[in-house]
Length: 198
Image (cartoon, rainbow, N blue to C red):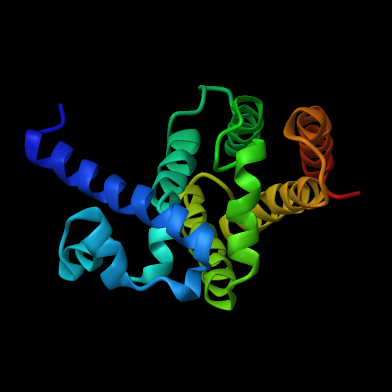
């Protein structure tokens, strides 16, 4: 059970992110200062950095959740389910529910534009991919004979399909129209992966 202190910390962290995100989207990431975010959230600048070591992490506040989802998929998989199958199920599930970490909703488009407009955010996103790959490699160690390769291939498969669908939405298509095709593409991509990229 989560303690009151932990709940209050989580609420403060969420409030900072919720206040900052629309500021970033409206004005551009590079044009918003941490001091402004702190004032709008009713906390000190030090408090902001206690929760988010870097300004970029405020916008990418779901990265810790992404790690938790990867961990949950691998460690909570069925008795006869492979890690890759469990991760495939995770990614398809995120797409089906329109989750911010793997699905599509029309309201996500301004967020993507904000990221694409900022070199700092793009760099942080690339860095995070390496961090997720490292984390997944650790999870697969002692489970998979080639954990680093498997982690890299799984995440590359997800990224390739996701970026293609996101590009369609950035071009004006709606989430309801792209999601079925995205899920089908995910399934096909993981079939290819399961087949050994023949």
